Image (cartoon, rainbow, N blue to C red; front, side):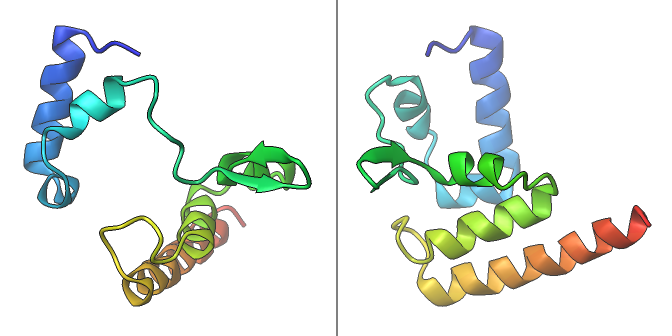
Length: 106
């Protein structure tokens, strides 16, 4: 995957202006561009490799906040920069937001 100059500038601006930028260095751009980057959510299951996105799709999880919570729960503390407790707290916040979204749709 290759980023255009405009995409790179937008990404750098996003990294600088957001909370994400506080957790990552801009050097992550090089990782994003690398085709060899390992999918940190990929796991072997019954002889095939799947990731959390495959699971969410197969269960038809469409609420983005539920998707985010599931991802946090499935990989709690395993992504290297947050501990399990922080991931669980963020999953709770995502579930609370998911409830708000569902109530808006009623």
